[in-house]
Length: 461
Image (cartoon, rainbow, N blue to C red; front, side, top):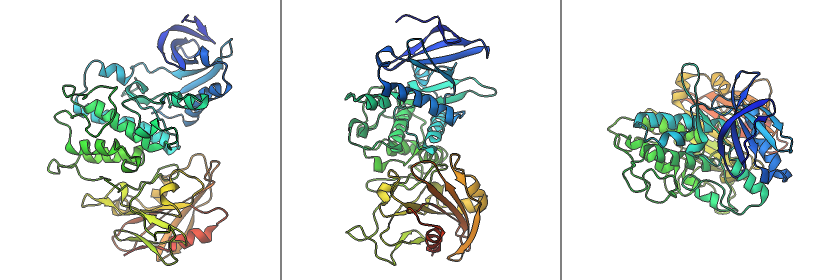
């Protein structure tokens, strides 16, 4: 490979790395008087228009998200031979792969780092972006005022390119990619990233002296690596859940994984399992997303064997009940990341004509319904909705409605994506029960009458 001396207006200093699809160069930006990283599409892909577009898609996405936990894009350009390049912020602290090459991190630092990585992936998930290739090489560090920043890089470009080019080779990194990524017909969603987070956790916290304890090329199996002394037992349980072979048995997204990790890391030592959450076997957690539609995977299906729900049927989770629209069913075991005073998950349900498909299929209407006493103690219904903006959507004015004995605050969003309408609603249940929250993607062409009818059917027993 011949090293260029300049790329656009930037003076190239040295090669930072090279892969199958791109090379990355360290360069000097005379305008900003600082160093940048420049990612250039590999020569052997320059002829493929689809691959070029995928390359630029990643740069556009990072530019649009523009978040401190993601690698920033300063500019894009094109070489004289037509290959596109992206000018990125330079991660001067290197990668997690570099650091692990010098030995394991202290347990407390490793758990904190895993929490930071999950926070970065959660940014992607809030925008309905799946990374698909979470590895130590894609976790970068950048010095900053006051503290070093942990950055998530390379948003699954290799898999996107492989898919665009019709390659049949495995897409992902063995040892970190989820089992379903080996199946070309499988749906790869946010739970694949949860698996990657779990494998990163095992790499950070595994015992190097144990067989397979710190090997990056080890495939996930029924017996995960032994963890080091000092790892809270609950953290081990969280990693087991995250790396479950079936996507349905994992946490639904990075935010739910992070909440479980934080809870387990601070659980009293007397609780050997670290406390909930613990979706096992056929049970799955329901979760609410902070920006995009909730991605929820939940437990045993309510309704009759034909999949139809008779009029008058209700879904139940603890004291929470929801009257189901005709043809809808309910699923749910708890609200991921929300814990009651007893340490158990607070009640939640997903209601939909097909609860299992609602998360992945934007054409399926549905709703997440949750009840949280802890949330009611810290904020109001208006404040809770304010925590859930939809940056890419146009918000209608808040409206208030009293339904089912509850005063609801309702926010509706018109969105440019595949789910054109998202409705957020919150209200305080009577007595000490807590705050009720509903996130709804209504059926096409339905209006406020459908929304209000659903809210009227939300009760606390």
